[in-house]
Image (cartoon, rainbow, N blue to C red; front, side):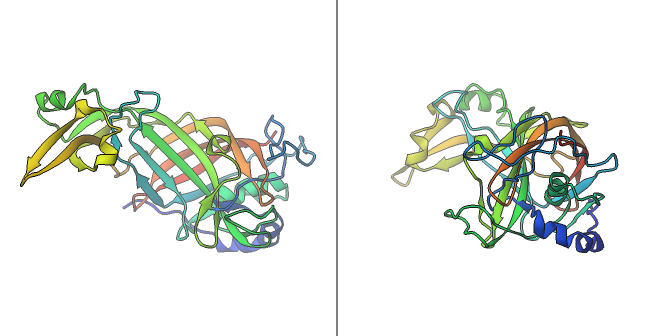
Length: 306
């Protein structure tokens, strides 16, 4: 069983007033904060933002950790378009409604520090103060939902015939290609959304793990005609049974158990959103550990808002 994070109800109660003033919500609602930060000009939809207090600091003992309790994986097929558009096997960790295991050591009143502490070390509800959109209206409640996503390389196979020549293995070694961190908004209906495109809210983080023995699961499965038309025929075959012809294609997915435990990333610019629909950069470092479920614990180990 994996150790779960402790949740400090007293700490959350102590900062309840601050949370209401500087709400921090997770992966579903709109996620942008109007506090300034991190060596970069604060961002907003119209490129304007309030003045930044460049001297603000969070203190040397700042810490925050949260249980990313939800895990989702995808199935990747070899596609016609080539490597630039090729879907990669991926696993995504994020917080959802039942994610309440969190804690933070931050006890100050610096708005941006408090916002980061709430996003990555609390499970609080905030009030949307931005413009109305399809996901939320002014005055409605939301949460911040952080998400860590990790993609892996497809195994070195040139075709379905090559896979069979290698003995039709059910798994093959792979390597981590890229990891990203995104903070979403989540509305009261548990719908996640962003302000702007994903590319303008997501940051690549240099994730390094103690154990890099990653493996890809392989399977030959039937696909429908619409999907098969976009797939590389070298990894597919037609099978006729009872006067019905079906197409089967090789696919890849990642194993789920304890995939990225004991990993970390160094100080990296992360986009932090706020309740007004604005966002700014903050430099964060973090580490991961396994939990008793398929999720992970994410702990911030360093922060720099200047």
